[in-house]
Image 1: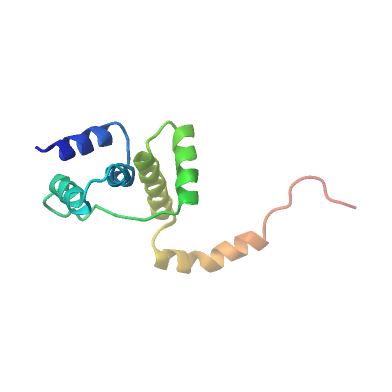
Image 2 (image 1 turned 45 degrees about the vertical axis):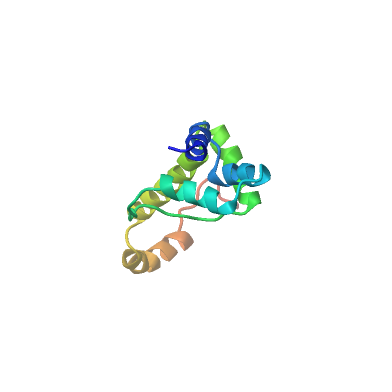
Length: 121
């Protein structure tokens, strides 16, 4: 392994994002081709169907970082938790066709709630 790949692995273990690591190399004057080659050599040789790559705004990343810190999670774990909870709530509500079938019942229940508390006279 080369110096650059060892540095990348150590930085990842310490929790630095690939973007931050790449910026550090660029600021130190490393050629982009060598940096990209090192990252490519560390990436898995196969593509997993469970792998997702998303680009987030700085504002959204700040919100996720705060939320992750509050929940004592890494950002990856926080995103995974959000997606897991979203998937579970979708499973509980059923498929899209079930939701459409129950829409009338749901609307009726919204407008025919039992009154609670004292009635005004």
